[in-house]
Length: 345
Image (cartoon, rainbow, N blue to C red; front, side):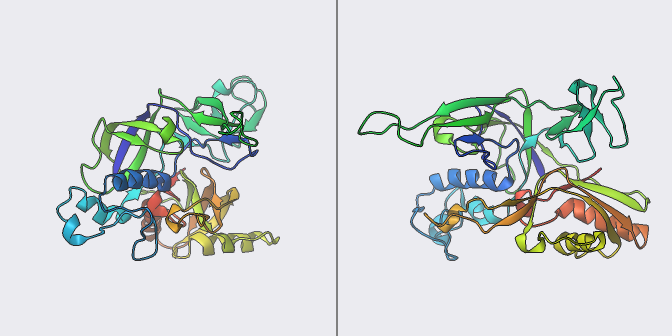
């Protein structure tokens, strides 16, 4: 597993849940599925056998695969196309930063006073009020991510005036002083320092240009404590099937049982003790389905920063193995696209 570091050369935009139809806000991280789609677009653009109307043997459009083994074997992209579906791509996130968790609070009067725990009644610096916060933290401070707003419209080619219903505002991310990074496992030497990567929406208008600045191996975190209790938190969103949860009121025990059935069925030495999580529903698009059929099936999204606390019910050694397995594999679906990554709290 490698860590690919990049800096944004231009603003980037990756849509999230809309507040209004004419105000489009970019999320501050980019899922691995969108990075994968951007890489696929670049690969297919250079494929002489690619036809947008053609489907792969499984009925998918815009899919990277070996289209003709005899012809493709002499292409310099052969190994890329042959292994692309097996690549693991993580979320693009600020380097060295972690998402804020539900236990983090910050001074209401001065955010420079750093983060406080849920046990702190007042700010340690000024004794002021504390409040919950969202975003990213780095070196004990809230990370400031700069944004850029532009207003766009479309022109009616007959009247030469603004087309009705097209005026909208885009809030993109533009922080060239921040280094971003994502996990990647695939063909060795595919990325090179100085490469240009286009990620996200509006790339034809100059958005989403990133320059690769560094490549280094990722050190896998290992849990080795003998403590009977451990807390893990999500460093990226996790996705689960919408059928696992509902709005019916249940007891705490039943609620924890639902979480275990949805995410932790394979655990035998760890018992889920507490959950601090926020759920949202997500649908999104899947361009492999073809024009006019791009909606995905709805699923539930667990926001980054959500906390899962476990206690050991068996030997400490076996509990450590299960914790390390969670840290390696993640939880939920689409873990090969970076969803469901966990870290020790």
